[in-house]
Length: 527
Image 1 (cartoon, rainbow, N blue to C red):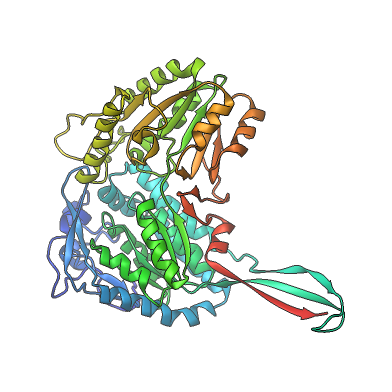
Image 2: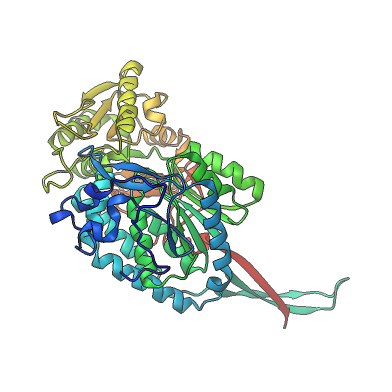
């Protein structure tokens, strides 16, 4: 493939460790590369992924570490361990590239993003195979909602949108600083500069694409630090961007398990903005560093979505929507409706139907077309989720179904779990578990339901199920959340996305992402 900067992205460096072959060749005859179909050895990928810095594929200073398939517990590949010095070099490369890139015509940037979208789309199957191996997402999810969404996001920003708009003229009366005059003004969106994109493990395609595409469209340059659990997919994205013609230094990717990698990117004096998706705890630490340097921030943090189900709701629709917590990424998603508030007349029926729904879901290998619930990302994370189930029992919740591991020989699986008779002050109802666990809490009237929903440290996305549309929208307006789904868990991908309270800072998606990755400049003149 025509990579800029030359060099093989997978060639082993002097300090690298061998062993990438199994993963990238898994599911491909004779150990073939999932993109080109040529033997892995032809690409040098058997020895480990390389960093992408200043348009070059660079050997990692600190060697490689294994990436584990959460369904098979086998090694997917070996990801590079960047040193802090290499991270700072990536940030410096992005700084050097910013001036020329920010001055390119918007049409040129849009055309590059369009080419990247087509390259990603043309490799949907092999890219999705790698995403499944890294994340444990089912094949359907990896294709449609990981790689497919990533391509769609690059395509979305492959169009030029107005970056300036007139301000209503103002009549100034004569005074100490001048005579009477009509003052005109123009507001202009300008790029922020260098953006450090720190991404989450639950979607190594859609999440980075949602940061990189609008940032590049606005004329920014980026340094991407992917989650350590599944960084290999992000390097494939960099490969696609390089092939699309991205100039040297405009896109850089550095990875590693050590916190020093992310810290070096966030603290770099060359970085003007940090876009982060992850836990609220890590978000706070990043915000502290950004505050010292007055860096711009876009934070998409934790969630504990409340789902208010009123007595007149279509229970089958509510169950199907809430049930996505069990199936979609096995609950490893911040927008999941994990805290169900059920009005008492339908409480028992809702619990019964949710339990039946959870028990019906097929659990198994993500490559099996029949599978709905795949594994959690790691053994450590599964143990964390299991500890919350045990905590719920101690707090007085009833485990209606789930809470145990299915009888599978390998993989980090956990049965979908429903906790009933919960109270809103229980930790299982207040803390983000990030797994296939749903807590159900009863309420009496509308006022109590709204109060319970708002009694949370989080406020990302809440949900309302009711046949009374007027009430549903009235309640939605009372909820302290960045988004509210009315009788649905679906999203409008042009609607602003972000959270209230500890669920984040700022808004992105659609045109709002262009605002997020820009500064607004005003030009004022008389006349």
